[in-house]
Image (cartoon, rainbow, N blue to C red; front, side, top):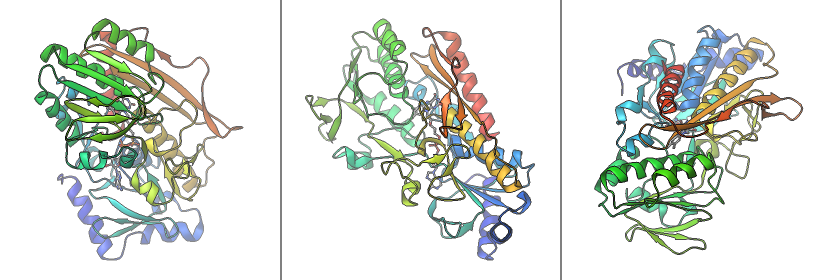
Length: 433
Ligand SMILES: Cc1cc2nc3c(=O)[nH]c(=O)nc-3n(C[C@H](O)[C@H](O)[C@H](O)COP(=O)(O)OP(=O)(O)OC[C@H]3O[C@@H](n4cnc5c(N)ncnc54)[C@H](O)[C@@H]3O)c2cc1C
């Protein structure tokens, strides 16, 4: 537990012990229907791209008057964006880790290192894994994604045993996958298995394949990288990745579309597919289908195919639970809206503004906008980007991309590699500093 977080947590738990949690917040809001922000508490579940940004902007937009409590089990924020560079040996874990102290010290967010175990949307209370309950006026739920382990036979156990990793949440697994790659013999095979869309961050399996191939070319020149994709074709930046593969990784990297994995045999290092022959590899990086974070499912908010949470895009309020706003990768996306860190950061600002507006009795912004930029490295220095701007379309109650906005790189280049690091440091500061 970090020193800055500990006192906040102690204060909060003392309050819980004294039966005070929610007394200030819920009384005003529940009885009058419109609490002044000073009396209201917003509980943010999950301190990733969406939750951390929401916590900070709720404080900023309310003039520091809202009581904002962020519950997050991890000691620090570890970024998925840039984490593929760790696998390739081009960055260390410290380069992608940001403490939560800024939220607590600079913005007055109460950061609680715990996990939310249950949410009672009727009583507006969330129970922590450690026991106490926290009452809220508004809940922001941003738990990211959960892997659907049982969609691929044997994967749950292989993951639990640490034999087949995903590293699709940054942290300990990022470093562990790096160690597996370092231990792979020259002449060995790394295979990344991609699920059908939608999954977290469409271009990133292909970025990972590029960076592992780059590492292999430098350090294990006889090694191979297999990209086994359940989709019909590369799902994002296709021509750019294919160009990089042809120009830089011919003979090292092989791409196979329409390859849907159905089972793994971790002891044998084998993946089995719906139609194709089995594939054996020394390092298997098998990504199963994904869905909203477990707490969203458990709370009954994943009302789209029992996978994703539908929201009212004007405010990001859940369509099944009043006062619960769902953000980030957990939501059912609007057309052409990627599941990305930048998009999660954008969701958070729209939702924070809508929550502050509602608590003040103001109307929500009728035409919110979202932006997205996603960089992908094709080697240690060169990157490509895709960008888009999305505007709320009131008639359809969804977001649509703004015609003529956004863009795509023409080819991989070094200036964009430098800009990618600039983007990362800016968005980390925006969310957490
Ligand atoms: C390899 C890789 C590279 C990527 N590169 C990019 C990129 O270049 N650009 C980009 O924009 N996006 C990128 N992404 C996607 C980006 O990481 C995600 O879209 C983003 O993290 C989503 O934010 P989120 O807040 O929804 O989820 P997360 O960032 O995963 O945060 C969820 C948080 O909720 C916490 N949590 C979960 N359950 C609970 C609970 N019950 N109680 C309390 N806390 C809980 C988790 O511990 C976690 O900290 C990449 C993803 C990967 C895997």
